[in-house]
Image: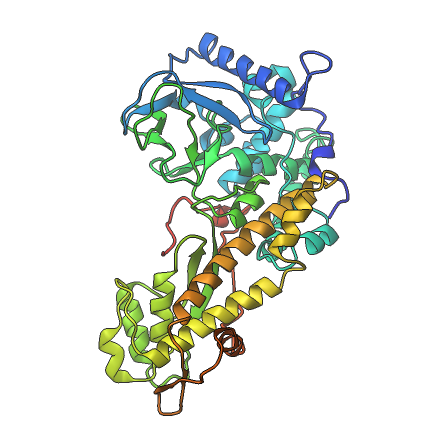
Length: 482
């Protein structure tokens, strides 16, 4: 890993992001670039009037958009003709990088396309769009190894960031062989590991997946509009019949309302792909992996039940901040069940307690898992809150603190919900399976609960990997069980 941050890299050979006037802030400069892009789309590309106006850049680099008329649910807010989208088709037709991208994934191809077009500078057909993109995105994948270890301790993002960095290096090694074989075609000063990684970080942050077209695209204007985990946000997709990329309202909007694009990724994926964290996102979650015990005498029966329900013998479940993971509870109830007579009560559709002893064990395991994961961080949520109040934090320190805080709030919320469910169970199961009241203080009972053996430690194995063709991100292609 390298020492400098992504934002300090000098990507010469690309369309420069010159400030229009001396003394302008980064946000002001970006806003000017937005306005120039809109003019180019209208005057050169013939973009017709839209139902929303992009007015400028936000401090986080995203763009603000507001409706300029009342819009009904299901109506298009913005429509871009298909020739304004950049896809794998454009990569395959590119005069420079088509052969370089062959055999690699869509996102790798788009990163190579970005490198080649940046090399053209103002001669690029897409220069007004390229100048609005950042040089790179500060994803933890590109942090120095020591920085990853220090700032991401306890977070499942640490393992994934390392894995992606390794995969990315392998991807570049395969590309580098082609670059070295033809230095006359591929400028060695442009096609370097650092510049490729920087370009890929931008593509990962700004490319969007269109479900109907089943492809990733870079979109002038729409790629940078602010994204949100709120399911009521507008949806971006492709209208096959009219050959247009559409941003469609999910609910009625009045004139002047802000428009955001729905992005259902949890913060653990969002930070890796985009270098940002969304606070209080309803789509944010962590994952817990659970499985059946193969030594269980009812293993085969339980496996058949799970298969009929659409689950595997080892299954990951999302854990959200604002709701109890009911399907996870149902799975654990079945996995820990010892009385075959209770199998008929198992359901994944309702919150059904199989027996007091079974419920005690399941809740105790969940409580212990949350406790263990919270204890794996270097500090508490309160420590991160205090840290974020400091003004001298680096960008990486601030981003990591926001991530840790979001993760701890998910775990703490789940732990609190489990404790509320445990409170009415004022007993401890005996060998006979019955419950006996220990006449202990509730906090002492919780201490006993938390000493129960923990869940399996396999966590967070479900985040998609990327950078190779068969492992392009697929977070928009499936919905996690709830």
